[in-house]
Length: 149
Image (tube, rainbow, N blue to C red; front, top):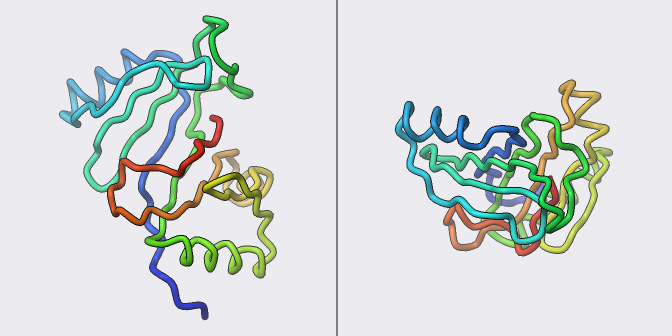
């Protein structure tokens, strides 16, 4: 077995159609603090982050403003499960373990993820399992390049 820190779930990302309604439930009714709400810097979407204790809940709401890259899949769904390890070395070790196990790993700058075809086959959903190093330990910090929803 390769020596590395244990992976931790840092965030769940949902693609939603009514951001206000979702925030009403999570923030007003359930009492989770809203950490961030704004336009996505690259996508044609509005985004919000709610602190749910040990994990963040990221909400991505597609818009039709023509500003930014349109989302490929705008269906309401859990679009990502963000998993972090402590160091870049641990991220490399995790990626190598997954590749050795036959998992279809897709690399992007600053992160990697399992191809959604595998998630569909195993779990019946196309949620991306996104993995990256988080050396600061701050769960609100993601990889240098965000994976498109």
